Image (cartoon, rainbow, N blue to C red; front, top):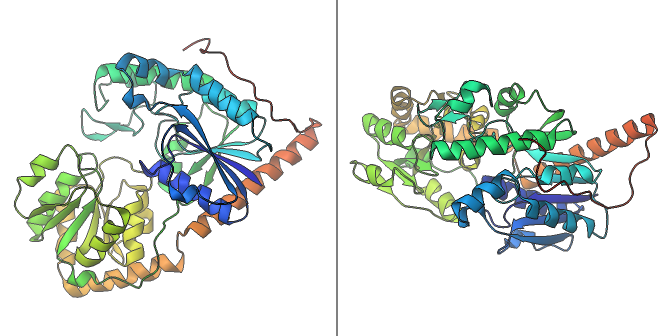
Length: 430
């Protein structure tokens, strides 16, 4: 098969791009022809160096690097992104069997969806976030510090001051969501969920679209090295951006109450406040290899107490693979991989419950036993790159087969050309 992977970056600037890159590499290693299209011009990860993998750079600018007004307008609808993508797809020497999109909010905008649907091949979108329904993308109210229970784009949603930046940013994101709704309309779109919780939550938000839902685990690129020794670990470890919505402050408070040091890998708005607390060690951002080394040497447990509905934070899976217990928020999709009381704890993102879990792990024998159980459970069904590529291959084949059968049944001939129809520069209505 010929698969087009579309993402905004060709380096792992975030979880979505990391999965896109690894998917592309895994599919190429599985024997598929892969075209990786990056929207934002820049360097490429060595993962994309493979004989069956071709990379195309659309040469677009990251919206975050543009002046505010230009960034807002292009974020709502970028004719430039649509035309460049259409040209790249039309120039492919072989028509793809399907196109898989991983991110579109930083440079591509809703304008690309009519282009993708115009190819006549199946289009898939992995839901790494909630932007398909929610204007701020995380289904979280930054004004109240709690997950959002409002219906996306309802009157209550439109007036809620929920954005992490300002009301003006919220207005721009509302306009973008309105453009997205029109761009997708009732076109057939396959959405890929990375956890069961995302599928359950998003299902009720996306009723207006003609979607087919699928479930595929993210890949986790860690080698099997035997279990770590968390019973000898000296700290509760947190890996990620240091923000309130991800629960970094909860880790500091609960670890101190449990009598354990807390070690933070990452940076963010809470860095200075955390640095002032006793028993806290901040290491800043580290390479993936360094993170793995630190976890194996220092971690008694990994803490991931998100207040928002995270989909599938990779650090949770990486810790389990290393044989390190995980204390995860019951709001996190990754918690489905944690066996409560056996390979870690699944608790509400509150200091009292976290303190109790950390206190239990202060028992070295219990931490060691949980670590061994975590390692055994993970490697019984590992989320390897090969498993991810296998599951994606089966999904693509099923989608292409079902589409072919449906077209034969309806008497509509399959398209064999690669001409792309480009949408109008602006949507008719917002």
